[in-house]
Image (cartoon, rainbow, N blue to C red; front, side, top):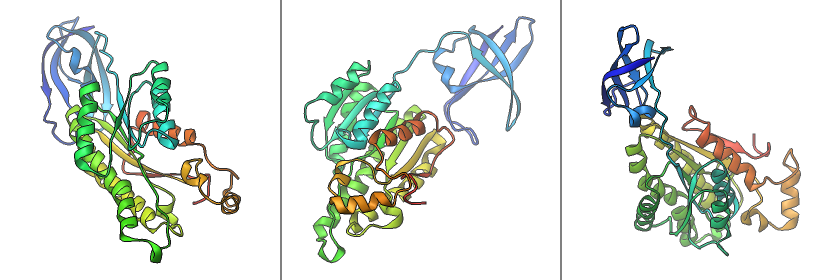
Length: 317
């Protein structure tokens, strides 16, 4: 055992470190004093005289002494915001995140049909709140995020799932058709990310997952607006990942293929059958399968950022 004689929190982090930590002096039971590093997760329980253990770790910068306090860590309830969360992939993601211990904020342009989603999440022992908002308007998004912060105190995960499609061949597509899809599917991702980032930066950490689409990669007849918006989401994802990695904010995109959602339910039966025949697994994906990928990225993907991950059963390789 050892005790902490002095420490100083490094909140303005010098390169190559990414998150706040502390440097200090610890004294072992034998009276040996040594410089130690204390990881950011322990900052909340640091005090002079704190008991703990000194562990030597080989790092990329050499052998360092780490002080690990004995005091139990205070458990922080993590919060996820899911846009377009009342149905389909968004609904499944909200429930899956709740199963993994997240409190859930859901936003959509229309409230859930019967309020069952909020009740289902609360039955899992997690807090849930629905906030109606239009992601295409920054003022509405800013107000929505402030309301969620006021209720939950933080946002750890943002899932930018809200999206629409207005399919027409390009020659028949009106400027209004084009702009509406861009406003929701691309500008909506910008608006929500911009509004949430300051809080994640202050927390020195966060996870963002953006929903793109296979249409952004292989094109889709009648979806020039949708494919362009989803392609833009991929580029935006890469930029956010590069700009905010220093704050331990990771940003990735996923590109679902043919998933059982309201969008693919609208495909004429003959066309849907033909599309499924081109999927190696021979079926549409379930929203829950996409949700599990999202949960993996935000709970286990600590070394994944700036990536596009396909989930399409081999329809596009």
